[in-house]
Image (cartoon, rainbow, N blue to C red; front, side):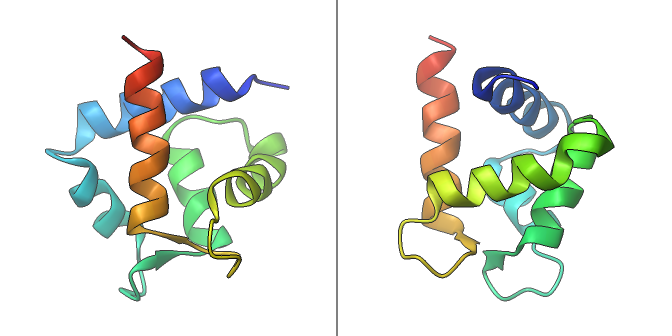
Length: 92
C-alpha cells in the first residue's frame, strides 16, 4: 500500500496543478455544497489524485480517521486545511 506521505503528495500535486487555491479544491470536491467532504467525495478526490482504485476505499477511511477532529466521519474545511498544512510542512 502507498505510504501516507505518497498519498498526501499526490493530493498536493492535484491541488497545485488543477486549482488556484486549496479552498477551490475543497469546493470542487464538496459536490453537495454542505461544507464537508463525505467518503464518496474523498474517494473522488483520491481518484483525481491518481490513487489506485483498489485502495481508494481504504485510504479514504484512513484519511477520515486521521483528520476528522470532530468525530462526524466527514472532513470539514478546517480539517481539510489541517491536512494541506501537513503536506506543506512535509515538503519544506
